[in-house]
Length: 540
Image (cartoon, rainbow, N blue to C red):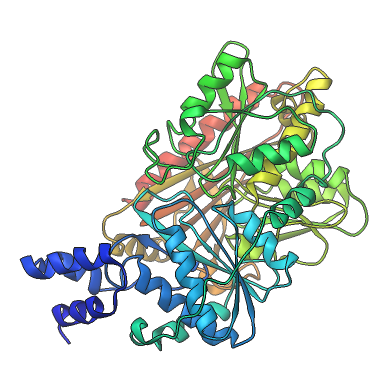
């Protein structure tokens, strides 16, 4: 069947007037390139579910793609099962949520839908709270405005892992025309009691008793503001001061070039608000509020944004010192090695996993804290983890508690970081990314690295190379290389799972005797030297 015939067949089943009009216009004007882009490939359903640009065709996010995904999930689960559905405020998210409910109900399953656009961690929490068999959230997290996505959770409240993803993918491929799918009702619309239960769970985290703190906050046009404000007030904190221009959900994200708090410029309005109001702390959620960015305003102006590894270290030590019994903490192979040293010092278990919270949550029994360097954290307490996924609301609340405790002692989070550097050595991390237009360039770079690996990087000897595709290090195979360097340094190189990027994760550890500032300067220089060498080696 030609691409034009596939496009006409798609048009015949598409229930969305917007994408029907888009596709009809492309066919009428003979837009061969546009049709090839939409029909020459398809969005693959994997452990992150689906994510892509909105538009017509199998290589886009649209109502047909979503209905096929829902039908595939329904076939794997079977009739009588219960699925909770959440969604954010992106373009078409509410429509995709309704379509999912209709397909599931039509297949004999029971669908419950969150009452409005809400943070992803509320959905992950709701799956376990309601004893559901699975969950779906419609979100593209911090992707560009034209994207949307579809993430699936299993009954334990965590993201799906193999082989479940492959089973769902195969079931999706078996779906024929969505116009032939039996559709049911809208499912059960949940009320605010599920949000109340989530707030109760996160405010039961180990938050201490210090509450004197002024916070400048931005949800970056996402869905986090109302839930975060409720959590702060319920815990006894002063309500955060919101960036008004970014407070309300807006799927076009008009004030930022890229709705990711890690991107340059994204935090500018929040930092300016902190300076204007004399805030003690700057916090941000990404648009679906499962991640949390943290900044400390500086006395002379400006703001020091903390890395994900720095926040992870502070949260970990806080949770460990406020819990007891058999516990473990976990992070990923690309995050700092600091967490392992903290765990060893405190006598708790430590797990290292592949990238992604779907793996972190399964690190082992007794998990009370997990994090990934990309500002994602799951914070627990005496009752364990309230959310089996990253949770930007619970993390923000706990960071605020740590900062309030430090303020009461006349200190800041930066002082606490210096304390950790003195205890464990300064663990400095950085990331180097290479965006490409042709994914083959990444494959070629990884092939070159394996065939002729460098013997030195950043003036340090390469002492060991772990080929992660072979399962080196006892983890499931994944495309990546880990270089261990002399002087307690490390580099991990891996292709991104969600973007056309090759990512390099760098770490150097510098001993600290008393003054931390010289160690930070040395670490910064060492990281820049490593970046220069990697740029030369990778040739991208």
